[in-house]
Image (tube, rainbow, N blue to C red; front, side, top):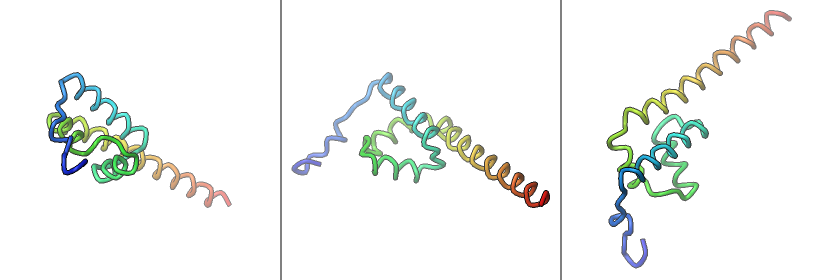
Length: 95
């Protein structure tokens, strides 16, 4: 906000802009292994990306797709934990 002027109120995005932002955010979720909206919000705030108002306006019609990305990251992290646990169990059983 500059001099009590909130520029986010006046930003309008055309459908192509929204699709581009959606793709970028989904890539960001996958690449940075973000598992939920809280982690995404924190990431956006720390890295000075567009405000959550813009992100939320893009997500409104794509919540299912975004949830799939979060779920995918969770599943991959869980699979890594399971594989590491199994490997450690095998190593401890071998000795």
